[in-house]
Length: 490
Image 1: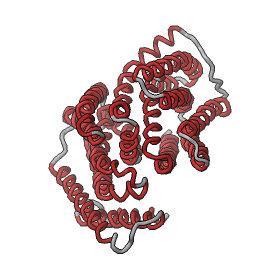
Image 2: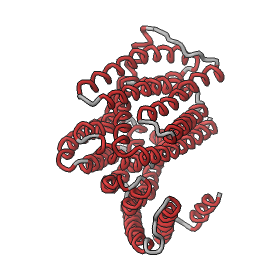
Image 3: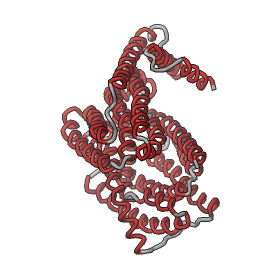
Image 4: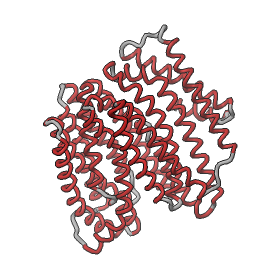
């Protein structure tokens, strides 16, 4: 069993990394070639469908995974009933999406784009259920191939569209091609591997049970979706598509790193669940290590992004995205709190405090909406960046206040080590910023090759400085350094 879990974790983590890489490269090319205005239209359309996608699931997928895993013989019936609910929910979500877009008075072009993105929302909803059934059978290999493969299909079709200078609508259809691949792949995997034919069932008693179980998950999902996408929708309405384009680039860069804490959380959660029952002391140890290890990754990434934000944005995305620089620097700070919130959230969920996490998400969502309403008219996209920073900080802070109710608070040795990581990151960030001023006199970052070389040198320099400081503080050992270099060589 443990071997199967390890393989599934490796499969899905590898696929997520590949998907994030494909997605980031594709978005970068798209943003550079279609311009700020069209990038804003593209992001707005997808944000609308992503926001309303919660209506197509409402917590059904976690129920499918849990109930199917309990009894594999019941998967077909549970899946069939959930597909029946989703058919209704997908139609409802698409109708509500159309109504909201109409009432908000957007232009004809953006309305059409949002309607196409709504079709992507529906396809992704059914893919989620097919993969949920496969997860309940403890097989993540098909999902892993689908996640990476769907993104690859989008990139290939999208690059062809960019080459022939197609419009934003055709680029959304490229995304729809990837979603269609995912849906067909998950559907066919159930049939080919398990001879499980997805079909619609209507079992009143089972439907009532599914809906009752899904309600708590639905509430948390609504909070997360609104918090994640409401800023873009508010920006699109208050400031227009250009503002969304600038803000979207900063958000995309920071979001590209999210797979790191997600992979950590996937490993921490089952271990925390076990230790909560059997060994509270080890639970405390694993929580502290998780916090420290993620801090050792989050703080240098945040400091590094702040230091090279200017040169990175202008050379990778172009001078027209200069307005993305300050929001990126602010959101780099937000990234730190986001990372540190993952082990806290894992601890709360593993120790039956999921209601606290849900409440924290709700409070974060409300704060984010209020701050955006106040700050966007005042300081524009910088206000949205500060709202994201405050939201991630609040989510982490509320969770951390509950930690002492589960385990004893970390001792001063932990806080001293955290301070060492913070000092190392600040020093590294400052030296990288200083190195830019010196290096630019010797290597003018003009053109693609020189720009990549310039950024590569800065990143490598920052990595060596930070690693050296951690070694000097004795936060990593000689054995750790040898392992790092060996992995790099491989």
